[in-house]
Length: 87
Image (cartoon, rainbow, N blue to C red; front, side, top):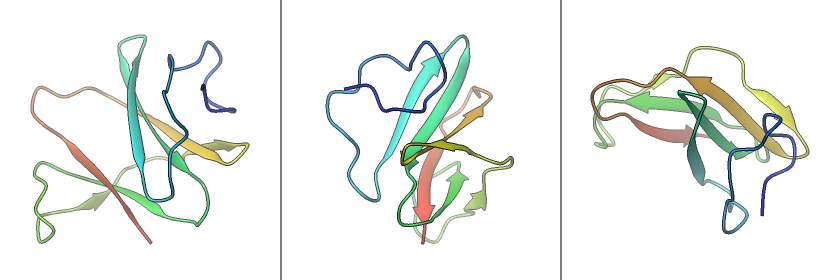
């Protein structure tokens, strides 16, 4: 399954469609693409650690959206990065 609306050339195979609240991450041409279902509306946030009380910040930029899938391209970093959706 390749989600509709992701960058041309695709992100590679995704084995199952994302469930509500799930975030997918793929590499594409040296960048990292983070994608999620567009319904219900949510803000993508990132943090250096997975703690719920951590320093979660909105991911800068405006996500692209098509056919029920949102995605945004982010630059890879040398350290761990965690992503979540805030409803």
